[in-house]
Amino acid sequence: MAEQRCNWATTSEALAHYHDTEWGVPSRNDQHLFEMLVLEGAQAGLSWSTILNKRAGYRRAFSNFDIDKVARYSTQKIDALVLDEGIVRHRGKIESTVLNAKAVRQIQMEHGSLADFVWSFVDNTPIQNAWTSYTHAPASTDVSDALSKALKGYGCKFVGTTICYAFMQAVGMVNDHQTDCACYSRCALLGKKGRKKSAK
Image (cartoon, one colour):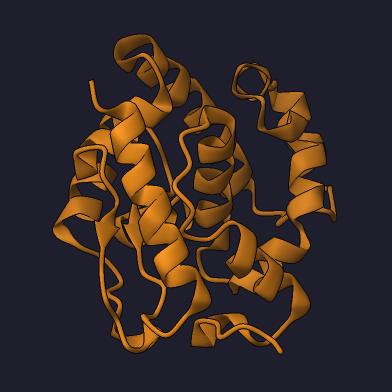
């Protein structure tokens, strides 16, 4: 019998797999965090399914989200990516990925890691919400406002507060699984374990 899922994750196998294995799971891996920041920014004005279907294309186009490599992409490389059908061919979004990689390198230099930086906005502990339906979850919060402002301060683009909140949900900084979802308690438990491990 299929497990209960959040109502947004029931329309395709790809969405269900992403929901079950990744969404809301606390991530402290800089490469993965950068990937999600890029993908959430790419989604602006589009559906998440569209981006998910192009994820392999994004990994190929952006050196598997190797931050140092992407930061060194040339204008010629960007010109080539605008013609790449494997990704969203929006010059502004492609340029922002390179710009954001440079900003992330600066963040890493100043804060030790991108993970340390973004997780500091939730005191290194996932926010646990308790929605009976995903439709009750907000589009943004004071925390996503602050994260957005800080990222923009480093020169990041396509990091508005709504994009930042979606990023926070994706990387487990906030647990927005519905309370009747099988992943709700699983992610809550992972959040507690992460807190113990990172407490110094």
